[in-house]
Image (cartoon, rainbow, N blue to C red; front, side, top):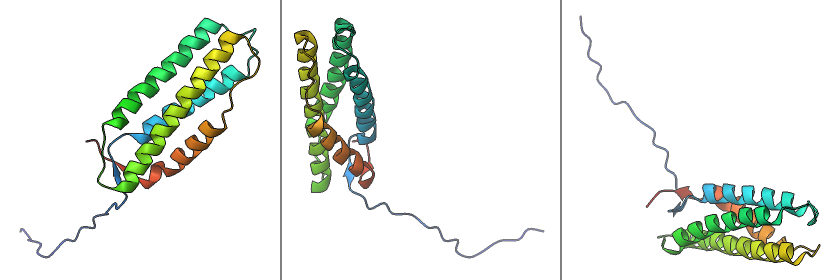
Length: 140
């Protein structure tokens, strides 16, 4: 005996109305956090103990990562202006981090004990990180 079910089976579809971004901001912000941890570690070691060539190579690797992300961001346009604003904020962070890295490299080679200020970079990082969940990532 076979019974046939008739009727309507309703489905609930969740609509995600967050603005769409076409770049993986979560990965960029995660890499930025890793960079920050490495730079904090480096800055806590006295310069006379640091293997300068190794530190510089590590810092230049971080800059190379940032350059790749920056190139990716420059080419993207979004339909929603808030997504473009967020993209610009992430790009601004990457520029600030690269500037900080340049200053850190100069300080290492100069043998100075003073390090550049992290304030603007940390502020931009915090703003970018706070906004990641406000957007939905869809690869272009």
